[in-house]
Image (tube, rainbow, N blue to C red; front, side):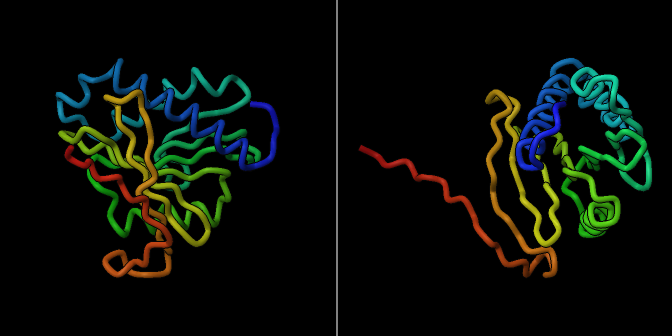
Length: 172
């Protein structure tokens, strides 16, 4: 990856992540059928990410609490990834947020695989908020931002900074 401003770099990193996610779903669908542990998903995801990030980056599992870490081992971290088979719990969100604040990766994501759903949920952590996004494997891995919530509040009472409203179909 060429050094760019942080926003462009994050967009590029997220795009590479989605390509690897597509590879995971298409090449390793047997993991879903066998109800594999999340560590199996982490291992396979690391292999797919390796194709896109090149030799200047290391992809390590279970480093400092993250499930996967893409880094140069000198402190530069374009992506930290946390993987869950179900929705990410409050404790898991706290863990990812604290990792993001302490290790300062450019992009911190949590991926909920959500077996049996037609989408996956991606959480993107920032200093003060979390973005929630659906990714639809059956629709070319299109992602949709659902909402942005402040981190400081309890999940059940979390104020939404914005929510994307879906257009309702009108009958003619």
